[in-house]
Image (tube, rainbow, N blue to C red):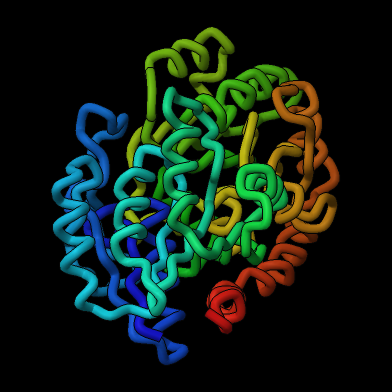
Length: 374
């Protein structure tokens, strides 16, 4: 198939850019003619909570892209939507995770769809974690011009069934993010990061309220009375960093917490996952999580909450532990149990086996099967 793949790609950063690069790689490997249509402006600066939208390091998976789309300029959508008709594509694939991008994506779908050209949307979320006015209207606009969907969790599947009755879709798990350097020995990673503690847990990724770092801070307050433990927090704050810093100080854990308040370049990610005994995802809400798929790449055990697709991906007692959301006591109990029962090696072995299920082959095959009779 001739495919136009819309979404962020290097030098834009983050999980969605990684997703596009890995999907492009798999589709081209299977013989499809794929062109990535990249953003020249993904988010207006006034609406972007981070420090920068571009990678500071290596691409991870280098892929070519055509930089065209301005997400907030309707004239741009119309101009390039009409111009891209000349590509004579069989399939347009868009990734959707934020309603802000639905107007531009919907317009491009509308202008490109024809008897020959169909549109497929890969839904990372349909209803966003942090709701804003206009979200439902924007999302509904996109669905008017989408022929097929890929969903990656039970919760998004349910949202789609309610939002678009009779939608043509396939469900396939978010694949593993296999673009980082391999795990290195724990002692080597800790020496690199200047960590001397025996027990280290990792919170990784953008810091937003729904990801529950505040719950982990409260759990650490409990744990500090019972064991020696270092919390390693790696990620850029999308919000008030000082609020979290104050919370850590008031909880009395600032002396046993290391904070890297920045986006971690691709080539450095392996240091942090290699240094930690276990990854903790104390999310309040979720659909699926790229952090879990990164952890699987490193065969890292995970302690996570029972929200969204996390308990579908993290197998309780085999690859990690599952606890109720927004419950510091339960989270603290699970972390202490992980160490008391020396669970690391057993859960790592389970993760090493489970990771085989999360392949890009399965994602590409789902797209091919869904669009086979278009």
